[in-house]
Image (cartoon, rainbow, N blue to C red; front, side):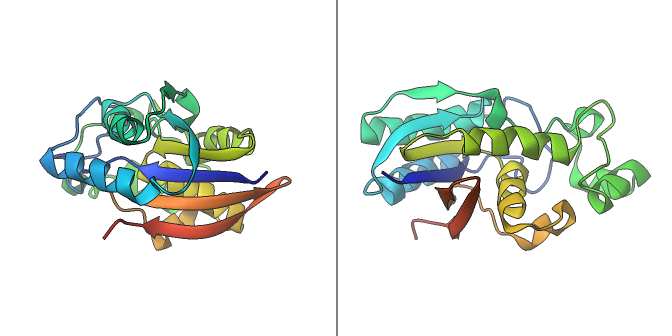
Amino acid sequence: MARIVLLARHGHHEEVGRVLSGRSNISLDRRGQAEAQELARLVASRGVTRIVTSPRARTRETAAAVAAALDLPVTADAALDEVDFGAFTGRSFAALDAEADWQRWNAERGTARCPGGETMGEAVARAVGFVAGCGEGVTLGVSHCDVIRGVVAHYLGLPLTRIFSLGCDPGSVTTLALEGEGAMVVALNERFR
């Protein structure tokens, strides 16, 4: 039997694109709730056998919409959690853009540590560990933009500084087919519409 992992980004919330929400527990807004329903329609025919989510409210709410449509339970796994952005959390991108620590972190994504947080490499390692450990069937993992892009970069052999070239919209799904120790990226940033 095949081992397929669908990595879905949570739906939209009021801070998307303006504030680095990080590990806050912000909920989906109305648009995000609609995106969660669209995600459920998108994956309905994919044979999902298991749904796992990051512990954040926005991912749990997205996973719950899919679970209700597919009549499946949801479990949470910290391996899919958002990057721990430490002192950057809750700050506007406009304010962060003027800070040297933020600029360095973005330029050195693989090794730079967020003040009081983790490196991108640490976040990706835990998420790749989750993906690699998925058994047979189709697992839907609901996570976060940078985590998903980092996993894709890992399997494509790209440095983490290249994640900005990978799309990952709210409510999108990226499909990986696991093969031995590796994975094939089957689809990236797929949306219902």
